Length: 314
Image (tube, rainbow, N blue to C red):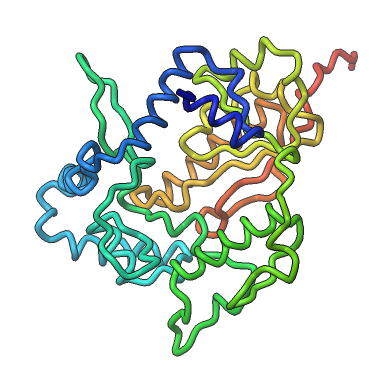
């Protein structure tokens, strides 16, 4: 019987797992087997979603529609996410279902959203992802095709779901054909393109261990390797002077802001930006764009290397 990792290497040769320890490979393989298990009862996402909402809202749970309405009108719109409509935002907040791509019942859980929490005696599976901001933020609020951002009577003609569909389709098209996406409503493929095979050797996806900084430090291959690095706001604590050894001179470092963490105040967002900027300067980077918390989704830094000590005599 072929194992999951053997299948992974055969079907996706651009996947690299050599950096993982055997324990981490076993854990990853366990995740793959869990995804492939057809038993839907193993991950009762409706129950987990309800538990998350009850824990988050507490005594406000019975008036949650009002809470969702407040978060949308007083926070989401203020952040510039007007492409997300109130009905789709509230539906997602209530059910966890963001994208209805076809008519039918969405009664099978998306097991890729499952995560495990290590308790005192055993691992507990559940859902600890986002229940406030929505997945529309990734692909549903900006678009190169301005037709998707048009308004009529100050209401967006396209929903965040439609914008997301267009953007993801464009990404997949450009990865496959290495050319700019052409927005065709009926068929995105030109004649003869159906037989085009993607060159999987153009890129590589490497899984890194949990303690990846100490691992990379032991490998000469990773020293001054990266031209660009992106940190989400949940991983920015890894942006340390130690990490700068992996950056090429002139490398670009993008750090997600706290703009769409809706529970933060303006003062807390400003404090976050201040801390991130100080961390970047300590790592030898400088800001190339001074962000405004309410307008920018990320901060851009350029790595120039640690400043040499000034030993010159006055």
